[in-house]
Length: 66
Image (cartoon, rainbow, N blue to C red; front, side, top):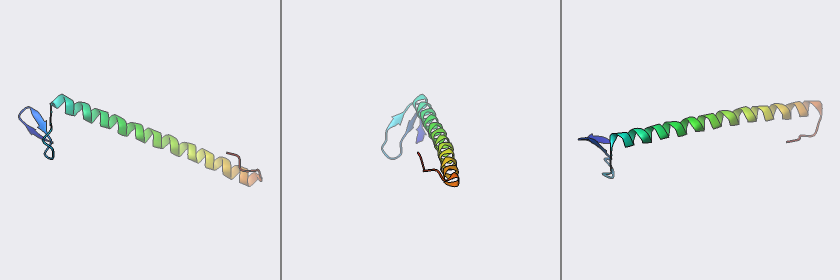
C-alpha cells in the first residue's frame, strides 16, 4: 500500500482505500491474531494437562482413559 493523495492504493492491483478503512482492516487483523494466540495457549495448556493425566495413569498401572 502506498499513500497517493488522500487514499492508500495497492501497488499490485490498484485498489484504493480510505485511511479509516485501512485502520479498520489493521485492527481486525490484530484482533484475529490475538484470538489465534489465545486459542493456541489454551490448546497447549489442555495438552499438558492431558499428558500429565496419561503419565499418572501409566505410572499407577491404570488403563489409558481419554
